[in-house]
Length: 359
Image 1 (cartoon, one colour):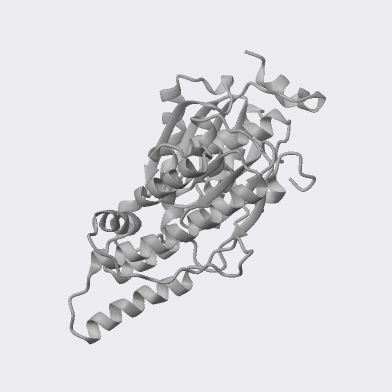
Image 2: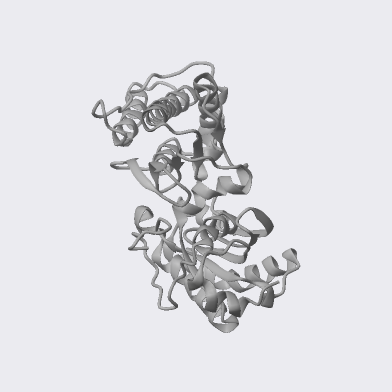
């Protein structure tokens, strides 16, 4: 294998293809480290989840998340290399989530990555978290451009146009709650434990009847999303049942909420695919694990004869492998990050695009 120090020195002379990246993800409540070869092959992908810790608080507590990252990051790095059968000297670069995310959590991964890159004298690649979710698909599928990505996660709901590899243009985003946030808030109102999304999904899929709820389509030509009104409608239905002394039809309400969310997500996604001539639709983010959304979106894409790309469940939630897949785009173009990199909770996806002057 080519000497990694030569990689570091000679990248300005041209683009690179082969890589062996150590990729670190600590944006929220999972500590994950992976070894990814050439942006496509997962050599290892170890994940330490904090869900059990945060469940007692009903949601993620940033300070606790940061402390747990500190406690586990070194062990995760050691395990990732051991499971991959890779020596540190074989690594081409270290990739890490730079943003968006919880600033304290991002700092832990960033410091670990910078320290490792400096010690090994190999490049550092600060990586965008959402680019990671999108390119998780590249670990299992061949992506064809132009394509459209529907990003649905705890903090993000976006429609992203990829006109070429590594190019991101946001054409629609949430104006208030992200889908994952709305699921968690509704689940909390229904007294489900954190994280509430899977509980709503399970109830909705198995419900025999439905409580119809409004759809927020916004302006006719808008690709933006809004879920605050739907969330209010769910709370109103709960309060009405309580005031009337009626038994709450929880499953029917969960189904009504989920169907409202799914209808709008699919409606806007399919319209965007048609308008922008996308050759594929990519489903990305933690909510991509939602069975109701997967099933309905697959049916719509089949009817429209548009290929739907969805990562396996284990690659939908936050993980290091997806960061390695996205970072490989930067590696190929010789775009590395200075060791004075700062954690950036507001990091722009469009500015992070490969070849962007502001990247």
